[in-house]
Length: 150
Length: 79
Image (cartoon, chains in turn cyan, orange):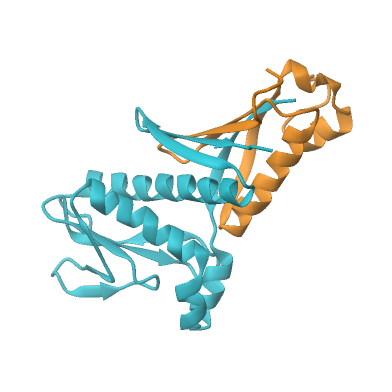
């Protein structure tokens, strides 16, 4: 009747990467993975009083584009921001930016975005399975509960 | 127990590792739910690699081949 699984996760957005590589703007904007990615970044922005834009800044505060058009800036903590870039060859999610003086935060933000993405993907998958989904944060871990009613 | 609905509790750690606890499923239905979950996660660009698979006592009634195919981490003689 039941079992427990433990495992690792890897974000690999190959379909979105293909749309980006082909410059298919409509497919990119409608892609469910990009919607989850945007949500994952927005949650971090809200929690840390930051803002989501389309560019991050280099060492000289010159704006840099990223192929997802998603970048997070946090005044004080991460003033140059961090950009989300998808490797169009592999689909891997990568992060770009200048972490000078903010290295710890730069790393922490990446981890939070990835954790949020993993949570949001699981919640979306459970909803597709017609489960009633709820989430709660317990000591930096997120617990997702999916209940299957009939 | 019989009246409790099937429930899946997933704990996501800061490093992105996950622990999925399948509760109140009938027979080997938890294995099918796990497969379905992994397929849907792949659609959302999330690849999962199972590092540990622990059948609960209730699952012992399920066909052995099903248990082993789901818990690929299990090696011969580990059960």
